[in-house]
Amino acid sequence: MSNCAANAGLGLTIYRGLRELRTYHNPLDLVRERSPERPVALVRLAPVAVAARWFQDNLKADVFYAVKANPSRWVIETLVEAGVTGFDVASLNEVELVRSVSPDARLAFMHPVKSRAAITSAYFDHGVRTFSLDCHEELEKILDATGQASDLNLIVRMAVSADGAQYTLSGKFGVSPDQAPSLLLATRQAVVDGLMGVSFHVGSQCMRPTAWQAAMAQVSRSISRAGVIVDIVDVGGGFPSVYPGMVPPDMSEYADAIHRGFNEMPVSETTELWCEPGRALVAESSSVLCRVDLKKGDALYLNDGSYGSLFDATHSRWPFPTKLVRDGAASAELKPFRFYGPTCDSIDHMPGPFWLPADVREGDFIEIGMLGAYGVAMSTRFNGYGEHEVAMVDDAPMASLYGLAPRSIPTVRTTAEEQARKVVRLSRPKGKAGVRKQRRR
Image 1 (spheres, helix red, strand yellow):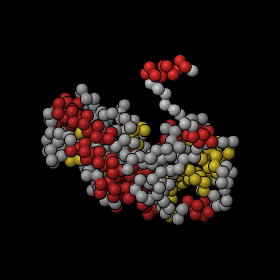
Image 2 (cartoon, rainbow, N blue to C red):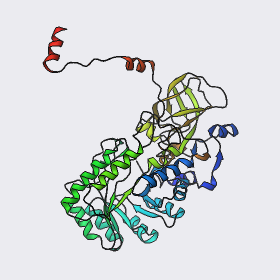
Image 3 (spheres, rainbow, N blue to C red):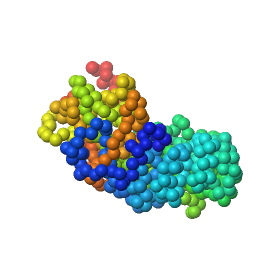
Image 4 (tube, rainbow, N blue to C red):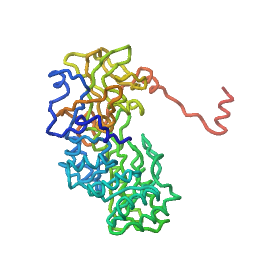
């Protein structure tokens, strides 16, 4: 996912703190009080705190929140209050954001490609000592930009398989297995008083817990070939959340797989285990309240879209859960709708399907759930849109992996889909028996 913390146009829209937020019992109370002109990011603090406690209590690893998932100031504040002290930052703006909230936070600059100016400022102005790299050139750049500092923690980003991920992150970063040993050795030799480590990323929204164990086995082979001692193993992010049609295994299975993989690695008893959860910490925490500006058949034109908080609904075609927020009765019949955003660009289209009451109409408000990760964080100001209000609500998220709501989101099937599910398909004989049966027909 792209890092939008540096989106200058968002200003206070993204970086509001807890004390600035107005609180409502639920989204309907907000609609009853006023009809907001702009989309509203609805904030829920409990899911962030509960998820943070789960990672700290169940994963035997140092937690570094991946700020890019949601760089809102209230998120950073809530995580700090919940005991999270580490943050995975990918830009100088993210460094400055976290420092402004928590001056003593542990920062790991885990973007494998950074400008010299960003490295220098992070090191000398903000006390960052941990930097990621995936090539010899970046290693030399870090050493040069920090004046050959002796207290650096250098983490080599490794390329691993992304099987099981809904959004692969394997194409852009990571040193290949054939080139890894020489880079690992060079990095080990560059570390003086700091720590040397390895990291990887199995891909975003990974639905297969054993993907981490497989990646750790792959990294282990490179460590053994290089013959180096590793001080840190960072298993990255990729921890999932709940979306329609995507119900991950129990989170305990992810912890168990990582612990098994770590125990099998050629590392010492003092080697530290790190993780970088993003989506799994914040996805449940937010939804977006949108207004219907026009209904055209099965198409609803909203005041938010792909250039706003619905990037994944457009480009990954995720059918996020939806609710009609109306002060009055609604049709019991549900129909599938597609959404269009407010810009003039025809790519501003979310195919869904999004199931809503058949009588949804212009002026209605729709809550789109599970957008705490890569929702408002992805907003741009294209075509003059993209600004969001922010408000706090006390109700539960639409789904939860941590017991705050049901673990799955009900999906609506069409009549044709239901009929297809009732069809009994007999297995076809294989080999010579199958050929004989085909000839008899």
